[in-house]
Image (cartoon, rainbow, N blue to C red; front, side, top):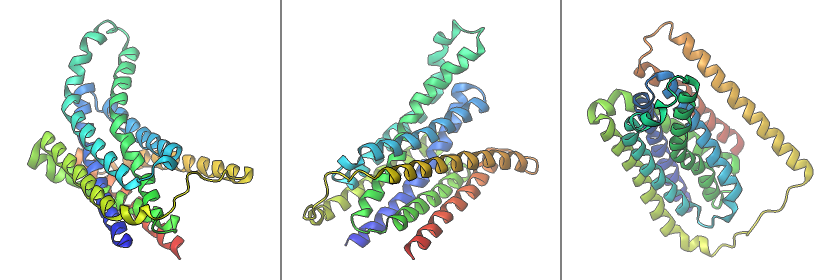
Length: 291
């Protein structure tokens, strides 16, 4: 039963990855209406999205040991993303008008106006992104109770979620927006998140009886000083790798724009290619570690 539940969680994590990229593409569109230029829109959306992922991971690390029912908590996170993500699609176009009176006093100070726009947009967008970021470590904790292979679990979940993001990046611009409209697409993405949450809640109900019989440690043993130093070294290495990847991605996109028309569909296709490589890398790493 636990093995089946684990694969179902991987499947719904794939679906939520697709919905996450649908939301992100919609936020790009709506932020352009709020901030007037694609440069500021992309800066606000991308920075808040990546920061939210980091915040969510950090919060899960900080408070994860206190969560006794990670699958239930994951279902709540999915509901939070569905609600806040869809609301943002509705309110972002009106954000520019709402900020108008506040920005009028600093009309001569372009830097101040852009700073206010960035701060307000970032504060709103980081909310659903933080909930998204917490889902991966929470699911790793859940599946870790059924499978001791941490590396395999992490690679499998990361791979499913990232390949789902590939589907979302392609579907949003090529199919969904033209068929359902922006707000209809937002409702569809929210429905996917809510469905994933409901399925996770059902899994929690089915397996909670068996899990309740297993004794779970209340806390974790403090690592030795050497282990703590190695952990921070790995964290720094991961930070630098992420920084380099995004820098390369920007350079790649600039070069590719020389050969293709830089429209939203082309951007989605390039993003899908990068995400495909990341997702396949996660799967391969999980298989190698499992062996």
